[in-house]
Image (tube, rainbow, N blue to C red; front, side, top):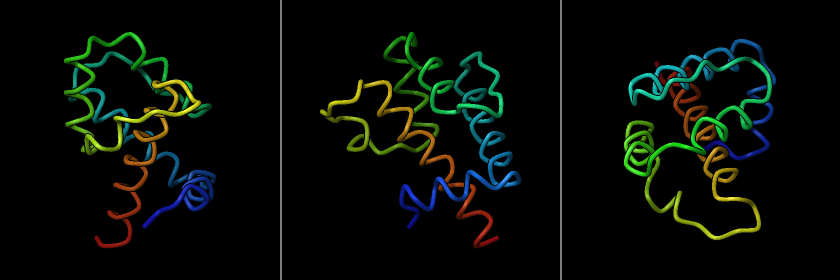
Amino acid sequence: MLDIQQLQEALSLPDFRELTLQQLQKDFDRAQVDVQFGPIDLLFQIEAAIQNLPQIQLQQLLYLIDVPEIDWNFQSEQSYHQKLAEVILHREALKVYLRRKFV
């Protein structure tokens, strides 16, 4: 649906980036994670926000964002939180993409 290259291209568009930022903020607020996202370096901001969350709150956040469990149980060279930040950003951008395409 939306691969990494398409995601990067979409996030380079100011309106898409802003809508994705708003979606991120909305879902983090719903999970009661106190963070304010800025327009620069979203991956780092997401990673910093999730790094010190208790496991139960992280699971709640992933549930609210609708990240399938299979997408966040992984082994890779990247740190767990780096990869999870990418998965979260991709899912949030996908929500925005689908909303724009079908609504």
